[in-house]
Image (cartoon, rainbow, N blue to C red; front, side):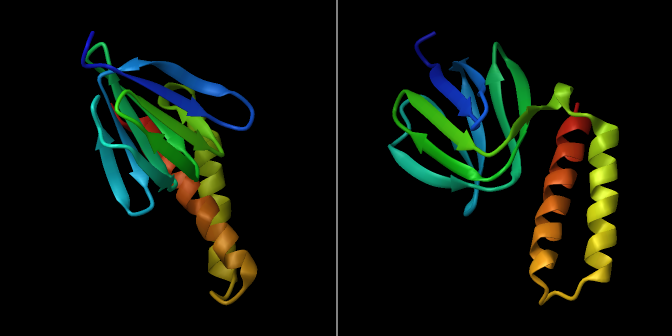
Length: 135
């Protein structure tokens, strides 16, 4: 289809996805942004969040960790630390990670260097849970 763009989702370990999609929505650090074929060139940092795209008129969701996105008129390349497709997320493991992070945050003062690590772990766990439980 002429209105499709190539999407690549790449982690240090693997190519999580590559293929033609109708549109993609990326969780940028300055806010979520959508990309269609013909988009102006763009380089953005990616935040912890849900990346989604439409392929064959169906929405596909990934929980992603921080990284970068490069967009051209015909291609979006997303380089992130981790990317998990919604239907492959271990929901129980994500809930346990959320509990551990919440417990750690409750015990640490905000000034402690470990507080920010725990906060990021909590954000990742919540993102994984939310992504896995969406319809």
